[in-house]
Length: 561
Image 1 (cartoon, rainbow, N blue to C red):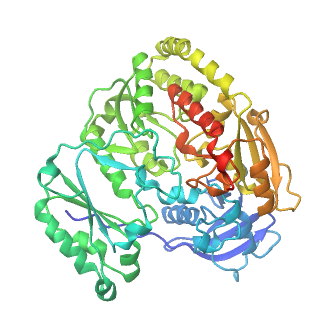
Image 2: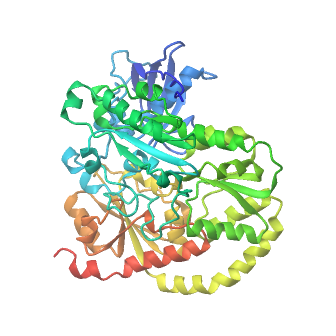
């Protein structure tokens, strides 16, 4: 089966750039239509067309033409991790808003304009104070997706050393980063299989294993040879995913052409990991599987996207069941294409907020026209109750959910009271720069996890270790709901941070780095989003894990030795 032609994306060419105070005007030259003026300001919570991590994007004019909208989305992607300061330094001051045609293009190299990078040898001067690595989360978010319900064979076109440079993100292999979708403390069920692939001795992963000769003369023939040998062993039930890697991309291999020339019975897709939207094929597969279910009669139930399978999901589904709401289908991060046919039999579809699933929500679920619940993710007691009540209300089971919740509270109240007594006085530390402060209190910037909400609800205090560059930065604005729990400490250089990590009252410090030596050397335990679970029982387990990190004596005894 031939892969559908890829839509040609417009280039982002900035023909003019200028700055008037805290507003940067970028003029985009968009092929096939008129120029588009984009206004870029620091992100401050005000309404805007879109937001990046630190920027707000608006545009001049009434309605965007489709090419303009695509160009604006591509620009937002390229500016995703760029701080306003870095962009402003490249824009000449032009009072009154006039743009300078002599200015440089918008940053085209995210590595060069990124304020915080992640590898020591890149030499970024801010590496010593970086504890949040959202760019790495975004880069590897596709590893959280599991395809199930059919036999999936992944063909990686590249050379073997790629496997050494990029370790598996599976919860069993040590990773440099604490990816929030990896659950090393509680592994969820693996993808279902009927064993047909095993009987045919088909591998789940194939590496084309490019050698020096392929790199010199081209590796397209190597990929076609591997696909040619695989083709007769597949069936119509199989799905072959051809994934690009760095080397064939650099040497210009025709991977899309090789996929288009596939002659096997299996369906084949090309997953270009370097594309702006590298998983559009997954949206297509999900939409097609949902459509295959037809228009079956809907019943009082929910179809849920955005909750990982495993114990917390089963507990939440059980709480909905206590109120008479059945979970009829679930997608993302586990994508069971056979189970997806039941999606539209539910009264309501539930989309759990997650920054890495937004494109799937827009492409697959929004067009279905179903009643949709998008309540905040069900973390903590208050968050879980709000989430359950929103779903039950949409299914006409609000009264039943109130009764079920009262029973749940009676069962769990003693455990929460005991846990909060033990937590009393325990404090968690978080290191952040001025541009990262707002992200700490925004679940969508914390991989969809309202970590601080849950920690404070459980009774933990928060020590905020804030980088102060010495330019008389204003005192950080702490949201009122957290003001009683947060103490702010300032540091201005590496030595001050080392001393503060050691002396601050907190017993555990947040880091996205695995076994962060800056934290352990200070005699404290690191913690991450991997410790946080949704649901009421998940909140109890989260509190016990965080408390365990605070009480762990190992680093206090051996830190710095």
